[in-house]
Length: 351
Image (cartoon, rainbow, N blue to C red):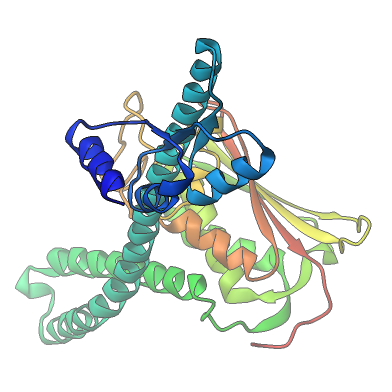
């Protein structure tokens, strides 16, 4: 052990990457001690003649071994093998550290989402109540009706953002309650388009819904959750389609295939800026935003307007709670089609 400690101190002193240590069976304890506490690969030599010798050396912790007498080419191969193993260990360590940091950031994001939505609710509720009180106590003659309207619009926008954050936090934790009922998706799509119509009209955007005019739209879903998912997707199409563009919504049925049940598909197609193939998965990540310098803003909150970047993530989670999915077909600068796929099953019970 004394000789082993001496070797260990030398390795630390000279920043050794790989060490070659003679194996002597009367010093097995020393070699085992060094290999146990040193991160440096130890290459053993001498007294390694039989398979049993190799097993003993490996059990002691040696990274590799070379038989004496050896040729330089043989030694080179063993050293290269040790270097390769050392690099692999370093890469694995870096990957583990990166994964740990990524996991920590993910947890921080989720905590921020949950805490922020909770903490913002109370002050916004108070703001709405105070604004309502001021509106009741003042009249047109006060000359502040325009300011009050702007305040109300701003508070409503903030309320919508908080609701998004709260619903996304709930859906990620599988806490969001579900109330299934048979509905006609044609009617829900009409409602969503009606809610977005004014924003689209101000931007000269045409939204077209090709109704089937039959019972093809009937399905058992949580109407509020699907309405929210559709709102996020159509609003996203509005945001990333330049003024004067168009958005088309189609609904269709897909027959059962193998063990898969029949499905109801909703396509939302726009003539917007498109999404590069490398970003197709990223757009569904929380807080991810597409930025493009060659496009313009038509207003502060319209084309390429602001937001937290959680709408598509929320839509994806809400659809997946129905055992459905959202897919994307798009090319950069050539529009996009988001497709919601919902399984047509018998009526669910609430949960």
